[in-house]
Length: 433
Image (cartoon, rainbow, N blue to C red; front, side):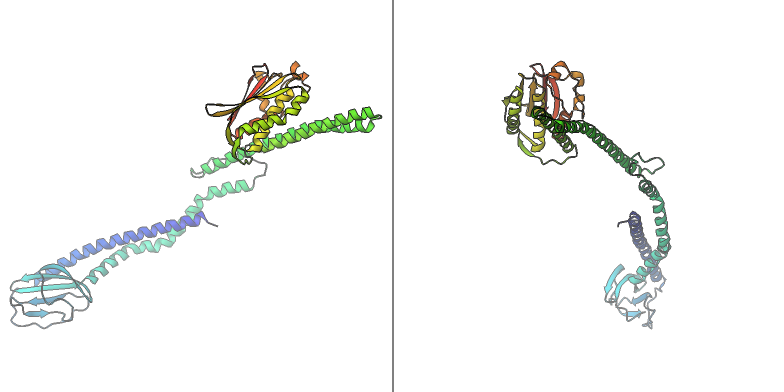
């Protein structure tokens, strides 16, 4: 498992080492430049201190050591008068001024000058200057290198103290009860930790909302299922107590109707659960023209049984991106509601038009309609619009889930649902994609 503390320690020490290395290189270059300037000045001073009189004979030579200065003196005629280190691999000629000679034993810094009647050449190994500059840089940096372990320990402690608020937040989360979704306190926290705590609080708030919604859904579903199931139980007892065939047939018909209502409610609850905003959709291009025609055709027998004139008024070609099954559930609910609540002898007109590139499905009826004050509330789960005289004559009781399912599916597909008065005096539902 990756540790932020270890990573910070590693990268901080790596940056410090890199900084020490760069500083050492700069110090070395600066010390080398100063050493070159100092030793060049020393070579000049030595040359000027030599006697300017001509030598009458070749002086004896001597070895001054590996790191000493090599001295060669020629007279005006080019005869070598003095050579302090005959084994030094220098060129047997003098070049006036400063120069650098490369030999098989390393580089040499050479200075040539005319002193009186003599030509003087002074040379020094470049390695001497490099060694001196390296020693200066090392003496400057060694306290920092010695302090690196202490610096690492200090970084480890400081980073640990900096991460303490995260451990405090982690402890607060670990000791919480699963149902405790109240927000975490974000006071007295570093600025870097506050966004994390705010994000956690946002997540806790969404979880609390989702749990409240789920609890309310379960409670409402249990309440709604209790009534049809109790009716089925009573109808079952009536069937058992029937004493003749006529009474038994009536009781069986009522029992079948009760089972149908309970089954319909269970299907609606399942459709509502599937239409949650986080539900999985298998989206693809859907021929809305053909899908709407299939839904209307499926409800033709029910409409004829109820004496309702159900038909397609306009059906233009249109394609939408979505889930076929979810869209079928949405359209079936709209057609089912319009057919159920339209009284016998009424009509339901279904149309699909394309307006400014937006496919729009309209389902209009001449039923009781919904009062304008309740048109927004009917999208809530288990809400039923108040009964009017016309609504009572339809002899239909709904579950209060149809329009809630319609709006959920529409939202999943980026569509909007509006309710308005139909030209025939009932309700018109429009779904605009």
